[in-house]
Image (cartoon, rainbow, N blue to C red; front, side):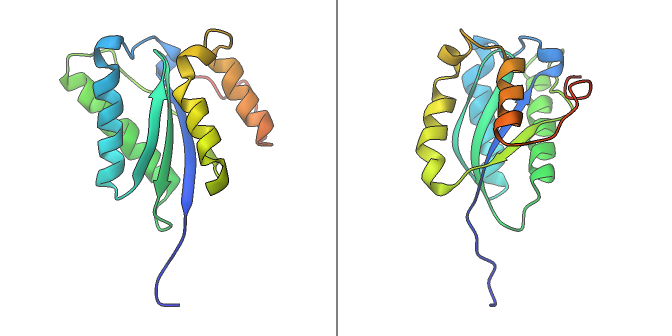
Length: 148
């Protein structure tokens, strides 16, 4: 086969450093739009981006040749720089992230989940949510090292 083909969809989750409430209503829409722009620049597609004051969920379609680690690094470093340029001098992301594969048939359900973050987090903290994702996806982890 002379062409690389694939459909790679991932649910990327990351928090502000120490889960500080740095994603204020004043910057949220522009930050999420900027995150989507970074994905487009990397020739991917942001299907939905949403979150709360302390974390972000991104459902993205990426090219098979792209490294998820590189995508996360570029998204987080560029958006942090953008926030600093917008006067958010304390803005920083946690060093790690969560990434979970999503099948094409699950995109509508994951999209609904991401779209309802504000409502979801009236009942569950980010830490509870993230640990539940790890368990649901059978990811081994040591809780001493998942929070910075």
